[in-house]
Length: 254
Length: 282
Image (cartoon, rainbow over all chains, first blue to last red; front, side, top):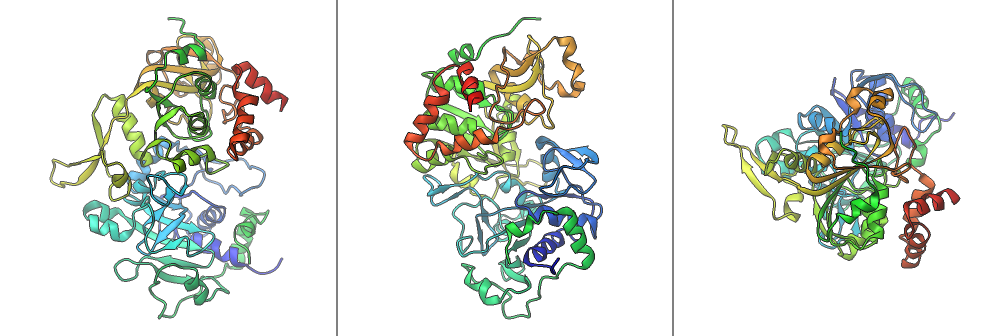
């Protein structure tokens, strides 16, 4: 086996999302790498995270992705309806996808173009409006491009930190847009006015590549941008155990 | 206990143009597809459809049955987007009430409880408020004075759900991992219909699942249909999983008007028995 690749750094970044979260519901909802990352976090530095099997069971053991199902250590039940109790009480950290992410952390999974007659109808807002005004929210973007990272989104399904601050009150208090992990880098929203700031660059990625693939001005470029940490040998062993088929390399090449 | 057994066609005979129809299940899971297929065969039109959207929505859109759609998402699970629904939205051929999932849940719950609305934070500060200008907000009368969205009740004329088992009186049971919101649909509706994989004796209901799986009581049900494989091609675990091959055939039917015509002729023009036969023949 060769050394860690880009996808492995993405897995680590998707695990680091949960650092410090403790005993809450860790809920990756899209992609393969966020699922591997959440399981890696629980197997290493956040052992108390609560997770589902991807449906309604809470399971205490590590379920590999894409492989033959293993026996589930069922520790609880989380059908869709009960998940709202957890979400609205702020006991979850969700990782969602986004077809558009703005400089101000607003996101869109509903439609491209005018809502009245979209150029491209997407899945709909789903639970994004409720998630973002109640819970810790992070995003996974497997293909970083200027079509995704835009100055303003066509439809605000996920409420960004600036809009939430403008709304004030508990929306401002509960809105916690943490990270956007992409195939190139990690953003947070600690830039001026809660704008997107580069937090780390994945190994082998240049700042120029991120800038060229982002449709807005990124904060933090003038500072020393850290490199996303590589997985340790122990972490690589666990990643291999969670993803024995290497599905992560299909999601992020290189 | 009354014998409430009926048929899909009798249910659809009750539908009138312009009615609001709630369809149970979730995305491409445990959808009352045999009733959806009966609606496709019927002359009924201009429906307002309320659904955790799956292929029920796509089929009704493709067949021109939908005037207005109330939804938070439309997805086929293993295929993220439903192409027939997308075409309807992109052509502007349906009205849309697009909500946050929690608002959708709260709207059904308000209707079930005969409340005019339920307050919620979900939706506030998002474009859901912009594209639904009819939505109003309320301010907490307590010290916090928080402004919340007053999610209006989603009252249904008719609800249709598909369960794993039921008795002839309408006591109905799910055997999969998730009840979804099917009991809320029947509680929110004036007329309530359950289709199921198998009608069993009341005394047999607890043979396959615990008492907590009996989420729909007969007092919430007006008619019961035994519809084996009635959720096809959506999943109805543990009785059967999703028919992924057929679901791909369904999405391919959105490629052109000719493809839709062929799909419709092959699967949707005959009876439910004809449909199940055509599916079995592959």
